[in-house]
Image (cartoon, rainbow, N blue to C red; front, top):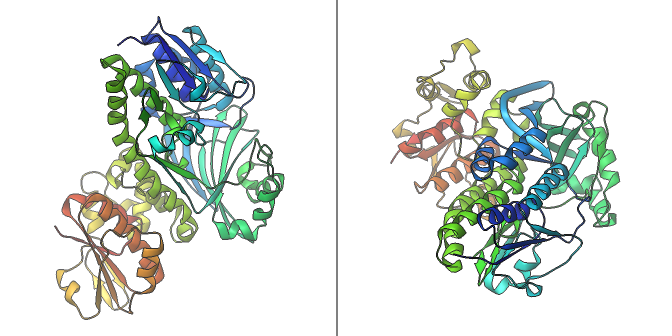
Length: 512
């Protein structure tokens, strides 16, 4: 298929990368990028690049990836709670300043022959091109103008967050809570240069309001930073900041918006990155998704005979991966929203296991392969034994399932519930169905639970339903005094083990 003209709306990483790839694969085409901002001004701090993202970028364009890696900052990952710390060694984690990344991508786009137009506000109606790529962000004007075609749905999270930074490099990426007189704030922070770190700080609405941030948010202009919040949080996170200040760049409290669209393309117009979809920041960056969208779009255009076939193929390839990531991200967002409830319940290594397994993507066994020291300590805390008593390797899963439990009048020889317990007069069985762990339906279920000594949760056997059930069990466990049991199909044994170690449930029943 021959394309003579390609226009890209939006000069962020996704738009610039798509323009370069398409120019490389269509050298005779005129490729133009239209960005309403100016090249030397951007907002944001660092951008993270995980190892899988690096592999994808290397296969698509090794030259630009090499330059990005050379300018990036490598780091490990850790979690701090009080004076406890769990640290993971991940030499393949990289971060780069957003301004630095944009500068590199602009250079590589121009080097390949792309025309860049800054300080130019354009819409799809202004452009005449064979292919128009709308990479115009979460507030996409294109998506809004063509809402009848794309049919977008936007869901707003309950918690609030703000992006800020600091003028020193943290020793590692870190998840660290800070409890104040008004409530708990949690920072997701990571270094992205020798003298810079990103600090993303989140909290619940009640804490936000008690601290007076509802008022400071109203008083902060869209283009400004909430200095009152920055000053407050600088004091709250003084230990993690090691005496350094928090700095803002259009820093104000926001609620995360999850974007879904029924379709990502119409006629010769296609959405890319945040314009088409978003995923919560706790599982990765929008930059990663946008640049991987660009790779898929370029490959689809190269392989197809017509533009319609190309755009269909692009969406068919990317949508399953994006849908899965959005589902994972939604669970991760809710886990972090409820983080203060479990923060004091577990030692930090056990909490790190709960974090890594929170969305059903990583098993305890897989995590142990890369962080045996953390898993050994966390599992020892779960089983109330010494670290030396924990067998690592092939026997770990069965050992976890075989740990005894004493709870009230009950004495269990292992964590697989005896079948007779389900019919015991003291057991209340709850068919959860497809109820998610959070929301009005789950709240009603919790408040409607009768007094019982055992709460047995059952429901469908698909993966999402099992994860919902295990998450709901964690809420039941904190809401009432009683033993919690969750039905888990044998093929979801890894989810059962992760839930036990993470104290989401007391017992499991491995039933088909």
